[in-house]
Length: 168
Image (tube, rainbow, N blue to C red; front, side, top):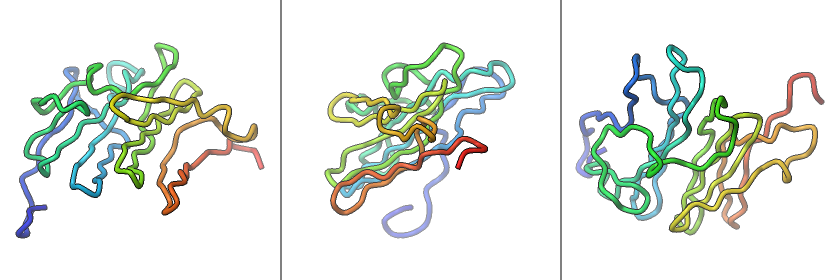
C-alpha cells in the first residue's frame, strides 16, 4: 500500500522457466519494524516435475520498489530460484521441499521453516543462514516438519507441529 493511500500495481516476484510456471505454495510476506519486506515461497511444478528445488526468500527496503537478496544484492524480478536466494533444506533429491512458515523476531531477524523429504528445518538469517533440524526437538508422536510460526513478547518461538493421521 502507498503511504498516501491506494495500492501499487501488482508485480511478479518469482517465477519458473518451465510451463505452466506455477511457483508458490505457501507464499508469504512479512514486514519488520523498520519497514523491510521479506517475501518467500517455494518452487514447485506438478506438470513437469514432482520434485521441488526448494524455498527462496527476497527482501525490499523500499516498500517493494526494488528487491534484493538478503545480502543486499539487487535482483531483477521476477527471479528464478537460485542459490543466492535459496533457504537451506537437506533432503533427498526427489523431495518436495516447501516453505511452511516465515516470521520476524523481536530483534527484526528473519526466521523460516521448511519441510520435505520427511524432515523439517528452521533457518535463522544472521548475515548468513543458521539452520536447525527440528527432529530432536519434536515429541516422537509428532512429525518433524516445519510449520507456521510466530514469536511472543519474550522472544519465544512458537511453531505448529503436525500429528500423523491416526495418532493421538
